[in-house]
Image (cartoon, rainbow, N blue to C red; front, side, top):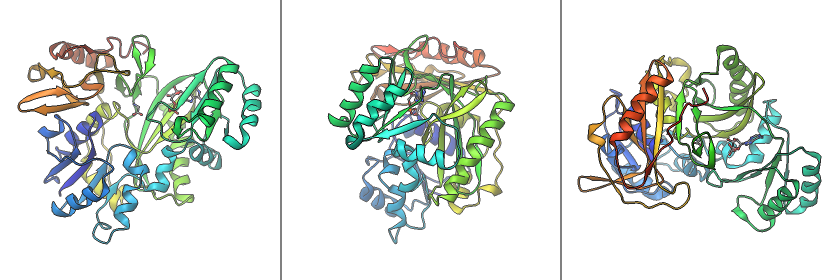
Length: 423
Ligand code: AMP
Ligand code: GLY
């Protein structure tokens, strides 16, 4: 079958790499893709939220399955757009409809969902212009640090963790009254601070049954030792070494199953991925957030650990028959280390030539932010290359990634040398 994948990052390169191994795949198209996806399929210059252009392309190219990488098209309703169109409605889309995508699109919606279905998460209240004073009172009732979350999508920047009470009040005011995060912050969720170690759990569901995909740990800060600004993610490891069988059983019993049952009870139209950001407090899991997509760079370690045919899995999700397929995993460890542009996550330059990609041995270089210029590969984003390797343990896998990262060069390249330091 012909598949269209929406997105352009390392996540999409890893999904392309995996789907390209399927005997069921005829043509793979990626909109808009990057220099890495261009090696596995055909990049098409369409913006991820240009639904009319996507429609025309799908019909002209006999696309039989659409897989959505990022959240923006889902929250904007790409799946609903397909279902509402007579010519598109029978083409399965992997990714929830708009009502399901609210699990990521609105923090308040996600918190209410968790409360309704008894899913463990931090205590919270939400505030807006009409009850700002109550927000100050609520902050006074909490202990530092204070966690403030813009309700809507804020490109991963909408969460503030603040030590000082007066500063927390000022930030609350600035989010609600001064549009600090635009309309995303018109409502703010304030929640109890949870202290523990975080991990990511990935679930594929057809809205009825589910498969738990490999878990992963993401390294979010720019600096070594988990210091400095937050990024999209600087590296990842799967499986998570501290997540033992007992803990993972709790995750399934208390979080995954109630989440999928909650989706069913609430009649949320959901065929796609659920990415559950978890925190382990003591030996118990709590949900930090839901995302309605896969993580990046987590996908770069999750896809290499799946042995099953992903195109077939997606087909079965589309048909509501996910329970009929087996998920087979690779027991090895997979690690990835992200090479970024100097300056990221603040201002950085693009268009730098990348050399050395042909010299890589025993790793997979997933492209995150790259583009082509003739036969040159150029940087085209903050995160550039996710160097991914297998090993019998994290040390072995990381050693391969670091050896290969030395071979790849571009002006002002940077990567963390300590991924896995805390394990
Ligand atoms: P989110 O966008 O909701 O994932 O939040 C971004 C980051 O803020 C998370 O990855 C956590 O590190 C942190 N965070 C969010 N909520 C809490 C909380 N209730 N307690 C402690 N840390 C939190
Ligand atoms: N790496 C975290 C995310 O994709 O949201």
